Length: 374
Image (tube, rainbow, N blue to C red; front, side, top):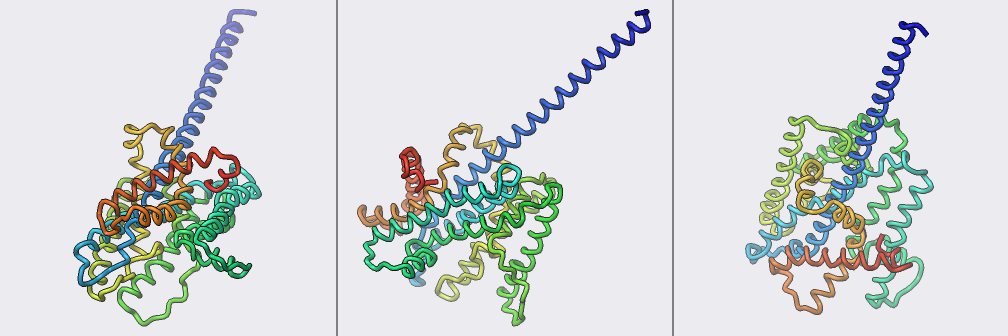
């Protein structure tokens, strides 16, 4: 080998070495990106679920909101209205989490496994708890039709109605999950805008201004607007101007709900629902901004609380949906709780939810019983 050939050979060896190093760097970078994405999903979604379930319990310990008495409302109802409005994000944020995590399920497992997991996590526990609580209430009437209507009529506890909504959402998700990944954000954004205008904004304006017009484009895709929004917020990095707009709209939705409900309720001397409802404009604006805020600023919580601990708690959040109402009933019955007391309505809700999470963690370790607390 002459001198030139030796130089070329050495150059090729160096070039190959650099290419390998470059390829290795790319692979390592991709691994970091994948890891970061995975951490991001499990971390802030866990926080969102935890805040959601605490919100659900506090809404129910604050149930005297619905016991409006015009002659005496100032002593309790003003604070009850504020608490109700603050935590009204609870169920919507849980649905936003579903949209953020499940619309790409087909990239991880099959349709068969998807339905098996939903059946195991929601349908079996929902059926079992409905039946158990039905027996505990000492109902003696049996029969297929009666039990069917109890199950689907949410006549045990109203919160089970929200769980049935989750089941309907799970059934609809596969219909929109097999869209090409590169087109998902665009198509879901279109779906969100379409539902926002046709199902939310126009009916809201018709109601507010008492317009005598017929509107036939009120689509029946219940909660799907949150599924689309959850995926978009989770996967899209918003510019600062859009974040400011979303937060501004969220604050506007909050005060529309708070002040609008107060003014109209006092005016009509009964709870006014004009600004209420999970699919109503104020709630959608507020809940989406809360979800974005959790995504953007969850890192502040991780500076105080260990991530592994939060993720562990995040796996327990469906349990309190089933447990908290019977526990609330027992506490009120046997401890002579004053349900109008602010400490009970707010801090009692935190305590009851924490107790439910502890019970769920214990039940999860017991064979067969663990199916009751997914």
